[in-house]
Amino acid sequence: MKNNKIIIFTLLALGIFSGCSKKNDANYVNQNNTQGNNFEITNDIEATNTAESQEITDDETIYFIPSNPLTEVPEKIDLDFTKMNYNMASSIMFEMLIEPEKYIDKTVKISGQLETSIYEGNRYFSVINWDLTGCCPSGLNFIPPDSMIYPDNFPESSSLITVIGTMKEAFNGKSNELYFFAASVTSSF
Image 1: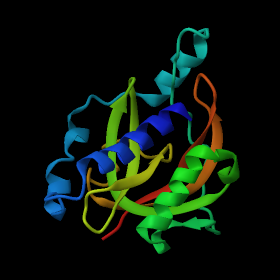
Image 2 (image 1 turned 90 degrees about the horizontal axis):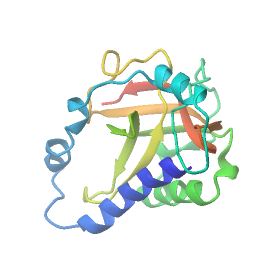
Image 3 (image 1 turned 120 degrees about the horizontal axis):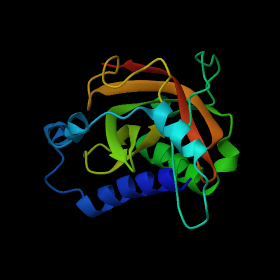
Image 4 (image 1 turned 45 degrees about the vertical axis):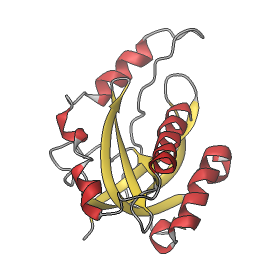
């Protein structure tokens, strides 16, 4: 949960500290979110195997992204963020941080902007929602299907996407955390 909390907290803090000022133009979002294309791509499976083979002590932290176990798109959706207003969606995302056990095995559908970043050698993918003024982001990190290789068969960075998947608990090298495993990542227009 630590990595997810750090990234979601950072996104929430970014929204709070940026304020709802002159940055409400939709072009501002697209012009300033291009960092994802400039990173070297790492092999997550290799990182997983390396981390699993090393002994982990309390003093050192080795995080890795678990492999995605989903092979089929869920038929029933428990949380459809595409039908919620921004305030409701943000509230549920915050509750996921403080009570993750309530969301284990829940299926989720969410639409928003695709963002990617690298943290501690792992590539992270997020689907970000913006409020009406474009100043206050919220969203979820997701683990794409194993069949998707970035950037080869991903939608373009900063484009609008819809992600369907399941929240599952998985081991990340240090502890069990709640992850959003995507079964489907598609462009949405």
